[in-house]
Length: 139
Image (tube, rainbow, N blue to C red; front, side, top):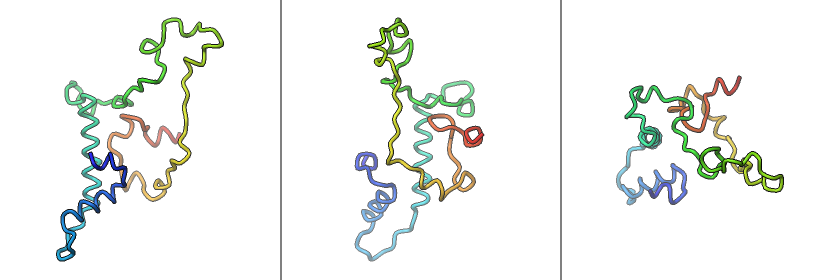
């Protein structure tokens, strides 16, 4: 909870845990940052699978299809869910109510993408939620 609410980087959170363990400087604490990152990714992966109910289907985890772990946006206009039946025949001055607006956060950049690669850092369930597989996307 603290890691999510404080909005600090994983490294800063880890360093705070390390200082809580030993802050006097008399003993050395083993460096386990890489293991901490791996454990956190695996925990989030398993949590997404649990929330998606993948353990209770006959095909199991390996039967998860593209986008099955993504959460439907309640605010996005979806026919049959949150749009009226006659939304397509709305008058021109009301059509904006049924338009999907997509925005881009200009502060978000994939600078760290240069550092790593799929071979060094493979993803867990890449296409099961919001991100797509690399090769089909590149094609």
